[in-house]
Length: 421
Length: 98
Image 1 (tube, each protein chain N blue to C red):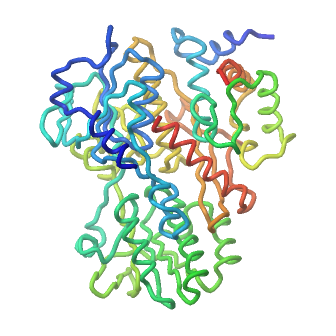
Image 2 (cartoon, chains in turn red, cyan):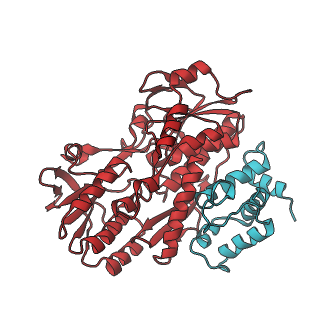
Image 3 (cartoon, chains in turn brown, cyan):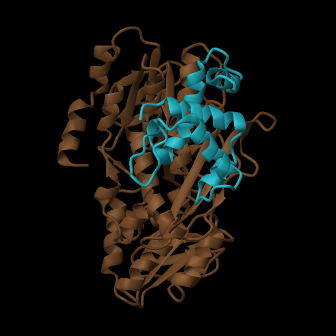
């Protein structure tokens, strides 16, 4: 985000108090007020499509960050193949759809009063609430991690932003011959192929810049959780002798000072230690009582994305208890938002919502220029009461290719534009 | 040939009050993750679907689905859509300003 865009965003982002005083944002009759919490792939898309599909609905988007930083493609920043500016965008364009932007953090939901409490004070009333809270981390499951992270010695970089920049610096400063260790939690976690992509592009960087350095992948899962065949071919063909993959290697503790990772059976020492901790629905989902399953995820009605725990609240993205064979991905969050927007438009217009058919496409880079992909189509199945993959559809790339690498960038630019205006 | 409006209305199913073009726009909305909002591509490598003649787009989608046109991804996506859905998508994109 440029300085200009940032000023622009701040100038136009109203405080909750100012919005409440001004009353409805739109002129003419209002069909209802929707508050959207979270300006990522889910929330921003929901805000935009609500306004596209019914301009008489007042939409307020609450986001605590000044700009959007994309997790997809952020692994390229770690490898030095892209910069933070390439994966950052402003939220200001959403205003052109009539979305009110509030720079604040939602800290509580009063479902009975239908109101969202904000960190800077005040509250926003709603007829329907959309919560797209991202994930937060169960730091406690890896003893010592939180302290090691706060000291800056051991990072996750599983939310694109300052940790992405800091981990890139650690990789640059690591000596040739050093070991970069990446710890992957048990599924489900955000972006199933993300860790394996990270291993590939860091290995691609090492191959050119530090040819004696190694990538050690410590996976809590029994096997690669996504695009396994394609990743393993890339490791064998491109990174033989660089990437060492160890399944069934769950991290239980970290010592930041010595960069030591304790696994269930042995200990591993690394020069750069990158631990992706287990995840759950973001804090606001916990505070709002939206978490239904394993103390981690939010179950929803997949026809509307409405929470099964709290009426009038729709939950999107990685925080949801995934439908069968549905990954926690940016494409899915964007599509969840379209389900919710359509359902809310129907509900506020007195119609019964109809289910949507939705699409997933996820690209992973395996080198600077080559990528692989997985796609799926999901539709409502009344018998099972959920979204399921359409039989015979979907699949993965035939092979890694530079064509898929170009399509990966095209996908990113398209979904950023579709989500953010 | 079945009029576009009726085709889309048939797809609306459980939401009889929803206008046909609104139902088709919801069917088309997921395509935007690669083809841009409303089928307006944001990069030159991606086909702008807005304004493509309906018959041509419907044929391409069927050819992808039936393996008659090679593809990197669209053959896998198109297999998820019925003939009626392909016709509704093609009609909606054809009606969008280029």
